[in-house]
Image (cartoon, rainbow, N blue to C red; front, side, top):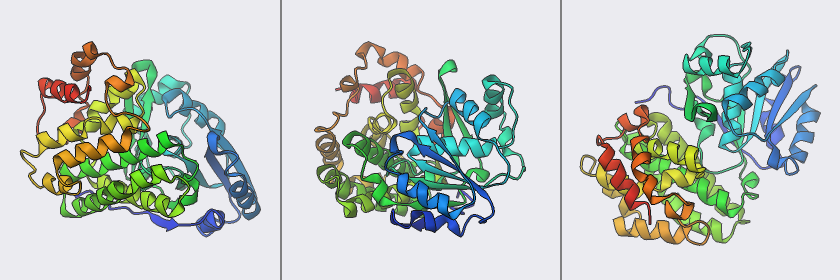
Length: 373
């Protein structure tokens, strides 16, 4: 079992009292460094104002670039300053990943992005230097980043997906504000909801699964099955958004103990090469990978039973997605002739090794073919 299990102060708040919620966690004589998703600048104006009233100094950096090596290097160059009491990070998984990257390498002096790349690969961030605590406030319901100790840093120059991970990357506090998810457009709502579904399903069957994570997974899956279609139909319903935030949280807690499996391994090349958003990329192969894994994890039937069986799961995926984004490789413009090449590049060792069934390149090709139409 993964240890420690969620050593995070977890709070739920309204938008009105979100700033007050974090005041007790940061010394009032310290400055706050705020990282915010640039797309939410207008929506977060009131929060920023309240935060400025609570602390002697608040420096705000708006994040618009995806979490990649060059963007993280630029952030490290511009963010460091003295007397920081906390890094407060508000946004979706990409913004939170940037916040984790900033905290991981806080105080490090890199000459250039290549030096940072080496630091990521050599895990230099696992040093014992004192660093400001990280407070995260997600504005999407899907990634589970608010309760996990890792982040993805993409490396387009090397066509690679890099990770930083370690117990030190658990946030000190996570504050869930369901109202902030009201602004998500349908595509983001669906993609992040499917990401949470993948986290829950993959945690359920991962090699490192355990009874606690499986029960959390089933709870998350049940909530997503019920509420993702409903929130797509009624995007301004706060009670439905709250249920999806809870589902994402349960899924995040579950896979924080297990990590992910083959679906994520296959997804990375789909995102890097074809720009398929992460949530869609991982969801494309859930049904096929689940069927293959059932040979050694027969309790996967408990997952499919939530949808009234395997066919019910396939039908639910199709009907939930069809009005927003048809879920197939062909719908994302992937040429069918590329499938063998994708299969050969779909093996991210850590994720594939965590899959309960050892998949061959031929297995992955068949999975991609099933996801094509």
